[in-house]
Length: 205
Image (cartoon, rainbow, N blue to C red; front, side, top):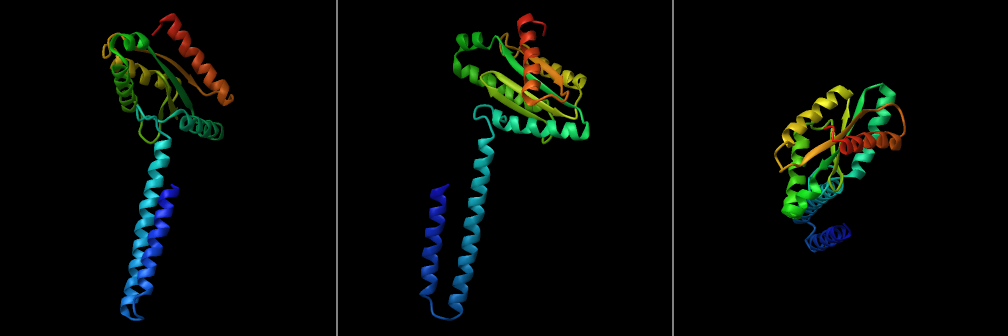
């Protein structure tokens, strides 16, 4: 970022020096116009660059899903909205079953491909611009579903199970699905996480 700012200042200074050497005529007016156009274009490109950097900071590099930092802020925002408007809010936490065995058998490159494909499958199951799909790290994922009750969230997860089933050599998913009940963020996450690990342990999926 500092490198780009320095380059902008140096370039603007260089152009301004050229303009000051022009005679006090139409050429100087034209030169000043070019300076303003140049600075506008440079500022526009810098703004786009900053925007891309901010967007990249919210994403998981492997799957293209949102990362945990973004998800946590989104969850806080949606919890507050749910309390204010009494709108339903469902949270799904997902863990891959038999993923370690898959990695051991096929290697980490193949394992990363599974994670990328799961990212695509998660995006295909949610509403763009409304719901949030995130990777917590490793093989743990989450879906944040504003305005969705637990029954509808369960149907979404069942569609995801069907898409995953048989796709990656015995890799399947365990999921915890719960509606928000007004508790703290930590309590909400712990409640959903506990259900996910109970399903994983009991093999009830």
